[in-house]
Length: 111
Image (cartoon, rainbow, N blue to C red; front, side, top):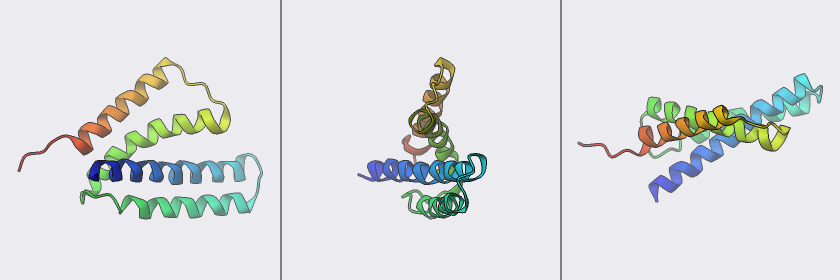
């Protein structure tokens, strides 16, 4: 159950961080305005709080593992939101990152 909670928090963090960055991108680069940028800033702030809810207490471990989630999530966001088509190297890189997340976060650790 702890692992499922952790994975759910990583997914929520990715939605908030990637979504927040995308909203700011839309506000600035696509000229959608201050409301989009403001929503992005709020989402990015919420991302920071979600990361603190992880069951593991090691900041470095959480943020290192989240980096892999961010890489894969960013590619997925691009596919869904912008019609991006990842190539086989994008996909291979995302898989490598997610394997890294699993090793960093969920490998059994001895005393």
